[in-house]
Length: 309
Image 1 (cartoon, rainbow, N blue to C red):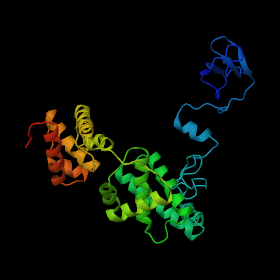
Image 2: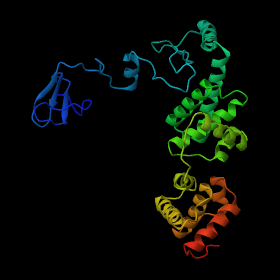
Image 3: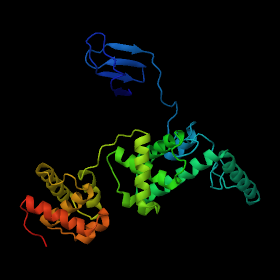
Image 4: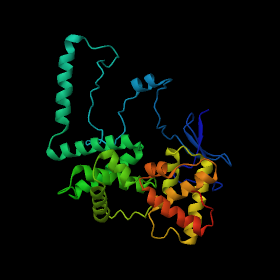
């Protein structure tokens, strides 16, 4: 018997008022798990009527396409012609027909973009995919960035600014929305766009779209920097504890979060017996060695941490 337990949109049992309901797909009933009352019967099974035992069977039997995505200018709703020289049944297309298929693909790509606005959107989203791939950004963050960019286009915020800078600003904003921020230096390096232009474009988007994002904290960067430095969880916990104490003592007030995070990691790496040089930490954090040294001296003095030089 195929049973799945779960609350059905806040429904309750009319007999005992329990929320523990079970969906029995074999009988088409919604049953209370506590008293056995049949709350609903003859409901529709939303799943497929076929079974698949591997990926190939699932692809062949499914009658729906890929899910909608904001990373495509047409949201992925248009038909796509595969670049693999195979037909629907998996057989190779004869050589005499390949030139014809190539022309069909080429014209299909052209007619998907019907005007200048769609062409610019398609170009921007392609850039977003490329920059995101270089920085290792997950797809859900890229989707958020694409949605932010689309809102900017709808409000005509692109006029007078380069597409690259708005794309980078959208990625930067999306990373901050999900509390996995990337530094402007990192985005600038991946996109080859000037950091000041990215920052200016981000401030413009934040103001016009009312993003109201909270300032980043050193905690947001510690795990990311430690991963690049190949430091384990012990170092991460030690660095977070140093940041926490620094916040309590007011040391981090008015200081850049990346500088505080970098200095805390430098101290933590030595305390756990896996020291990293200031040069190594500066390379992954995007701050200068001088900044790390200044923040380190401030933190070690107030927290009474012995000299590490």
